[in-house]
Structure formats: C-alpha cells, structure tokens
Length: 451
Image (cartoon, rainbow, N blue to C red; front, side, top):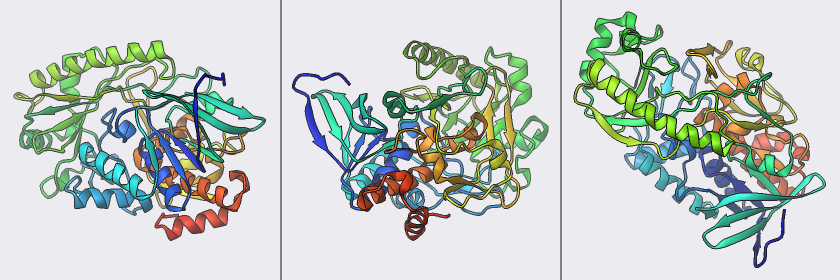
C-alpha cells in the first residue's frame, strides 16, 4: 500500500468492511462480544443490497417444511422491525418457491440497523471506501479508507470481508474465485424497481382463473386465506409481448404499501460487477430495461393498467462476483444432500437458485432430508490470509452453492458467525483458524443462532 502524506491512523480490534446485511450483523455480533469494532460502508446509509439495490423481500428464514433455521441477530432485526411497523414478519411465499418471505420497509430497516450498531458500540464510517490493504506475510495489517476527510489507515487484529465482492480479500492478495468454473461468468445483475397503483385484487383474480400461467408450485389452495406476497408467471403475456430481455416470466413481490410491488424482471448478462467499465454499462442497461418492463406491465398485465414507477434502485443488484477461496468450498452436492458439518456455524433452507449467466431460465435444486444444509466455519476462513474472515456473498463456495448462500438471511447468519469468531479470536489472542469451533458454536447458540 503506497504511503500518503498526512494520512490519519487509528486502531481497532475488528474491522468489518461492507455495511450490508452480513456486515451489519457481523459488526453487531463482534461489538456485543466487547470488541472495538469499526464498520466501513461506501454509501451514506447501511443495508447493502437490501437498500442500495432494493433486494426485497428477505428469502428465507425457514426450510420448505416450515422449520426456522435462521435466528439470532437476524431474527432480532425482524422483531425490531415489527415493533416499529417496518415488517409484518415472516409470511407464506405465494410464489411457492420457498416456505416464507419476510417483507420489510427499507427506510425503517436503515434506522433499526444503525440503532443496533450504536447499541453494540460499533464505530460506523459511512461515505468511506476501502481502496488499499496492507499485508505482511500472511496477515492483513491495515486497510486504507478514502472519504471526504481524506485518507485513513485502520489497523486491527482481525478483518471481516463483508463487501459482497471480496474487495478486501482481492486487495490483500488472498486466493479468490469468480463466477462459474470454466468461463468465470456470473449470474446476471438485476435493476430492481417499484410500482404503485397496482390492483392486487385483479392480479389474484387472474391467477385463480388461469393457474396454468403461473409457477407450478404456487399455493393456489391458500390464496383465499393468506396475503399475496409474490407472483411468478404471466408466461403467456411475457411470450406474446416478446420483451427483448433474457427472461421467461414476470416476477414481482408485494409491498410495503398495499398497492405497491417490487419488480424483479430486468436481466443484465455477460458483464463483470468487479470491472468499473462493465458495471457502468450494467447500470445504464438496467435502467433502460426498467422502462421497457414498466411499459409492458402497464400495457399487458392485468392489474397494472394504472400503475406507475415509484422508485428505482440507487444501484444495480449484484448476485455474484468474487468470493474467497477458503479452507472449504461448499458445493451443490452438500446443499442438495442437506449435509451436516462438525464445524457448522450457520444453516439455510434456501434451495439452489441459479439465474442463467447467458440464457433465459433459472436452474433450481431443492434440499433433501430435513430441508436444511450446514455452512461450515472453514468456508468463512481465507485459505492464505490468516486473520481474514468472509461473510455474506463472498464466503467460500462453488458457483452452484453460491446460488443459495447469497440470499440475505443466509448472509445475516454467516455474518453473525464471522463477527462472533473475529471477536473471540481477538479475546483469546488466536488466529481465527485456531479458534476452537466448539467455543464459537456454544457462543452462537447462547445468542440464539439455530445451529
């Protein structure tokens, strides 16, 4: 890392980079252990993909059979949102892909998360971008942050990369992987947007009259008794309109307002989210697609006749980019078999969900057995940087397994594991890989994690 004149310096026990769901929970977990924690976020607000990219709702805290397998700080966030009127809690998924979804108001979420960080004693640095990492041998010594105040070097004992794109790992020279094996192509990016003025009663009526036009697992027998939370289908309308986007369906989720939906239909393929030129092109293409999709919905889809765009995400949503090469890479076989690991630190019930990097469809693979798989501690540990942990989207997996660990509740669960491990490692003066897993597991269970 190049020396810069007048650079300021400070120290911490744990530095967490990235203020998305994984980073928020990691920082809270570490702070509650008594560690001096700094959380660095490039935007002027926390929430990551849940706010900056309007990824909504959270999917899922449960197995297909309905067992809740993600709890701890993630569930506490939901509880606090409910208490503030910012979420109805866990609701049945009327798309039918998973058991539950968790709608939330992103404005309330930003405030709740910031309050919880403050309560945990976390020093939050917004409008701050990590653009350099100092390493000595196999250790990260410090990260360099650039913001309105100039440049700041923060030294720490342990670092948690919750950047989504494995930025710290990349800058530190850690072993990383990107996209699918063979061609490094990643799942497509999506520009999310909301529309108001949607007649959801008309949408539900059409669904009940034309079940063949919707996802085969849609719970039609429950639609009269549960709120409509999501819709996947309108296949005939999409095919007839021939919208020039590589998708084969309409997908949207309802809320937070009664006449409001979040549209998940744009698809930007073949671009690298870690390449500034590609990312610039993706942002522009995504916004063009938003206008196309909105026009199609108004003209062709029942219930959208009077709808209008109410919000477009500040940035395009990124499903996949870089991830660390860890002590173990979780695989599709592990997920589908519902594999259990002795060093489990998180669980998930979300199936494999691969949006084709180059084609139209989505490849799904569901979890066998009890409907949940374990995420091992080894998948959070960098293979070659001894004091670096990963959380969220950039943990160590294959391309296929990443298609489930990338989901927000799973990211929160790995965030709690990484933050707790980082603080315990500091307390015991051990590198994270030497931390007794049984101690970490006991601490996670004591704090409500479902492992």
